[in-house]
Image (tube, rainbow, N blue to C red; front, top):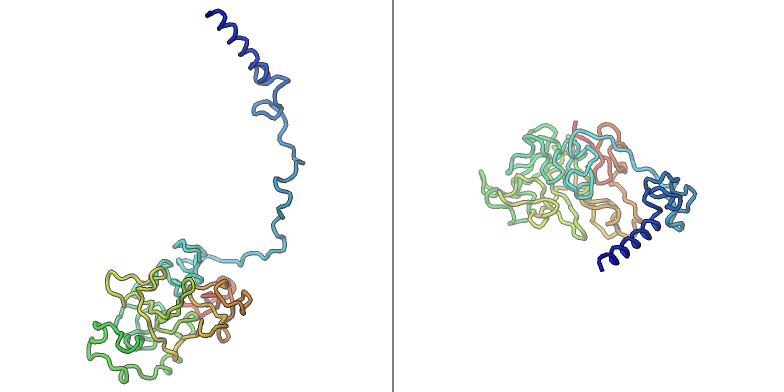
Amino acid sequence: MLRRTTLVLGFALSLLATACGGSGGGGSNGDPDAAGSGGPDADPNAPDADPTRPDADPNAPDAAPCTPGTTQCSNCLDDDSDGTIDGADAECAGSLDNDEGTFATGIMGDNRDPYAQDCFFDGNSGAGQDCAWHTCCLFPDGACPPHIANHGNGFDRARDCGDQSGACLGGACAELAPPGCDCFGCCTVCKDTTCKDVLINPILYPSGTTCDYENLNNCYECIKNTQCGADECNDNPDDCVLCPGQDEADLPSTCSGAHVCPGDLVECDTNDQCGDGYYCSSGCCILSID
């Protein structure tokens, strides 16, 4: 029985070796394209895997050039992996903003006073090109946090919210504010289909409260100061101005997929299209901080 089994097994192995082209691995009956056979490469004239699939459009426009800057909001990268870059990111306040992941600017000493607001977008908390506005002026009546409203002499709207047009128009703050924002960081921010006027200055929020693009419900609602900045967006059903957080797909159908800029601002996709001294924010060239 053992001899018979051995013969059968030997015969089977012989057949297998013949089918595989012999034990040399490179016999004349083997696959000429098999690895190690020395045969030719695949047919260079073979048709595409999917002959019905169109080639890339040779007439498609090239992406707008983007020369990297030195901060997160100017480096041509999506630093917080939210799908938006630099001035198209709702959390970028300007060219020197070094924190693309929150409404904070990442600028040392910037916007540190919770009781009086100057220009949010100028990169400092001091005087100069700033307006001066009591923080509670930015809140609806009765909504200002008590620790701010009761500070010092307390808050009085008639006394503390006077005309700011001279101070604002005498400086550059209005030109630094992105579309949809006033000078003091009250901005119309849109997420999905919801737009809200919110205060984006992190110093105004209690410890442990996160107001950012992913947590807009935690943000204070605000009233814009129309004397300084406050170029509107989302203020009528046919508005084609991009608010922070929007792209052209979010605009009404009457815009035909194209945005416009308020006033005489120039439309842009990247900073390179704005030129020196300007920053591309929400699709429009605004004045940049030196």
